[in-house]
Amino acid sequence: MARNWNGNLTENDVTPEHLWLNRRQIMAGMAGLGLGSIGGTAMAAPSDLTPNDYEAITHYNNFYEFGVGKEDPADYSGKFVTSPWSIEVAGLVDKPGTYALEDILKGKQIEERIYRLRCVEAWSMVIPWNGFPLSALLNQVGVQSGAKYVAFETALKPDEMPGVSRRVLDWPYREGLRLDEAMHPLTLMATGIYGKDLLNQNGAPIRVVVPWKYGFKSAKSIVRITLQEDQPFTSWKDANYREYGFYSNVNPQVSHPRWSQATERVIGSGLIPKRRETEMFNGYGDEVASLYTGMDLKKNY
Amino acid sequence: MPASLSGPVNRVLRPVPAWPLYILAVLPPAWLVWGLFQGRLGVDPVKTMEHQMGLWALWLIIAGLAVTPIRRILGVSFLKYRRAIGLVAFFYILLHLLIWLVLDVQIPAQILADLTKRPYIILGMAAFVLLIPLAVTSNAVSIRRLGRNWRRLHLLVYPAAVLGGLHYVILVKGIQMTPILYLLAILGLLAFRLPWTGRRPR
Image (cartoon, rainbow over the protein chains, first blue to last red):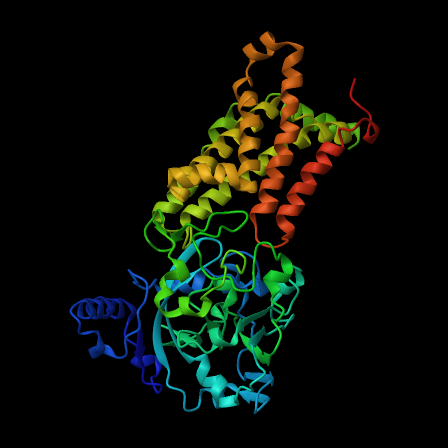
């Protein structure tokens, strides 16, 4: 479900979280009565999308540049400087160059998108992102006809990222999408959560969110976007290609070699987290299944 | 450690019985349960409990394996506490397993699938199964009944410890140093028992 937001909101304009959640329930009820369009543009989404609270979203993270523990990113990302910020856009584009974040955001309509985040570790949460479609940025820089893939690179600042001293991965963190995946309207460049700027642990100041793929596909703190003809290098695939494929679509039928993907622990669903059955494409199949027509998703995992 | 130091340490330890360890052993899990209801175990409390119980069990297994090297190198004997350390480790592993079964996975069909398909689960379960006869026979009656076989049976702690270390190494994403260090500690303590690594006590 997507909802347009006024891009000029200040933090004082943000609805308090408990009221915000209540408003979401009202909106969900309206949608059930066929009145969803009153609240803005509607986009189909998985069932039971009640967002997690801000505390959970900002204190249960995988961001190995700050440490491998779930609370490490919140605990150790304080020194990470995200302003000023720029993104280098390179490769098969009409307007390559280094763009300041302010210039990227200029003229973009910031929307609210409530997406389920499904981690490859078989847990999930629901996050109300604020951002704009990645396609808007790609259209702005002009994609050339030879481009087939989009590569993302995360910032690498060893002095500000204590986790990179441990070679868990081949830093900097790199990820990629096929061009049609990147251009899909669900693919979001997120700049906030709950109407507030992204915190460092969530990938500040700008990250990609691809809701039908496992969370590691959504690169954080992006400093470089490259359009290219060949499938890009991706960090987890490089670390263990048997476990982390290029596509990494959420798929309950394709187990991780070391654990099942059939169900997921729902973070924040009580003292003892509930388990829910994992949905194909994380519940976004109606929108994205056509991207993979004719593909063997067990081979192209 | 020179005899002048190990002697006094052993004298201090001599009157201290092992049974208080069993009482103390209840405190860490109780602290976790209290933390669970106080909301102090973070966003994913079940995983925190599961991981912590496993980690504490691994610490205790390493402590149990360290008793002999400490005695040989430093001359300090914690031998009378080793049984208690082992039983508490088993108790923690049992809790670790129960948290995984009942609170984490929750779905019987998935538990069965994991037990047959998932390498880290298989290794962890194998370690647990190897420790069951050790826990059952960790008493004076069994020592008398089994005689020499008791010592042979209790050598199973070595493969169980290695399997436990491997369980931790392969359950994490990527190559992480902490689990590797635990496994190296276990392997180092086992290597110390090889005939050429040190004087065996008479």
